[in-house]
Image: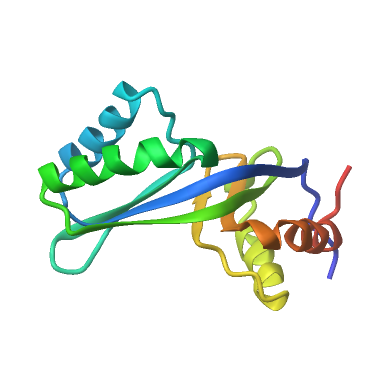
Length: 157
């Protein structure tokens, strides 16, 4: 099988992952958490919200690892105020992404990326995509291996 051409591989290190579980399935709960982080001067980077069974939702986001100590109490308080169930954090994590033009028109990219990572024993903690990027948040110690696998899997410029 021919390799799929991509524009390149992005890496972001020194991240922490914050997960919020059992939120009411209202956009307001997620908005309140993100707004609280903003008021604290903390940028949420990769953000994913997903419906859970039972009418609740979960939120996962990354922040710069040095900001985790300040971000965690902000998220925990906003979670409690929103009626959420619990907050978990994991550090250090990294984000690895492949990018290129018109990924939305090229359906094999995400499957190829995560199949290659799975074959290498690298499990994503969070996945996010855009029109031109497919990204996974992974344990920081897996970043070097993930980049090597993706370099072998895809055709780079």
